[in-house]
Amino acid sequence: MTSQGNKISKSNLRIFVDSPFLVREARQFLKDMKDESHRGTALIAAEYLNEILEEFLRAYFVDDADSVKSLFADHCLLESLCSKTRIAYSIGLLPENVFKDLNCIRRIRNKFAHSYTALTFDSPKIGNWCLELTWPGDLSKICEGLGCDSNFPNKDRFIMSVVLISNELLKRASKLSHVSPAEQRELSLLPGPKQERDS
Image (cartoon, rainbow, N blue to C red; front, side, top):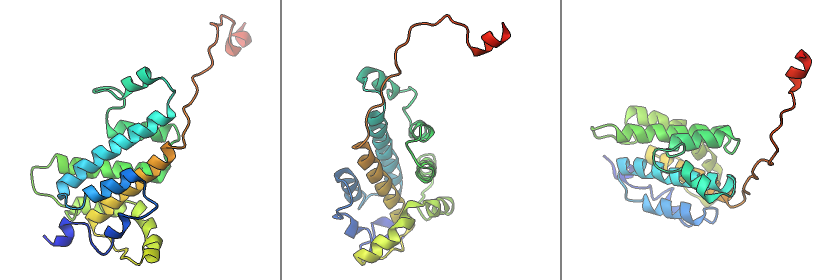
């Protein structure tokens, strides 16, 4: 296995650590992944995104700490990365490309987590999934401006997908407002439109 496969390539990702467009949490994640193993990278990245999505959803849900907290508790509705991703997309908080990338990242994580054999980001199925990630494709112009290589190895491609998605979610979370609870109404016993037509 090459050193390029083990570590973030000095020619491309290192320069992003101090990039001004990254928020603090995303920058720290990028630093933390520098010497992480392939399996460790996949598992940690998925858990990191799981926490970021929770923060993102909490910023949008009604401002009722007890009710919202119960949604994210163990064995509850929004415990997993999968459920958080689906609900965020279903209520219109995620664009389709981010939704697809998050699902792809989750598949990669599960492949590493449920395999007893040694896998890398260059393993056939995982490598193909990495190539499906869309966000690193947006880096080519940024790389040109920063003077770094935009040809990312699969592990770097995965890491940058996680960094860019989390960076976007964290920025948007800081600007979200809690939705308001539905207006309280008195119980109505009046017939509905269909009942009126049938009477």
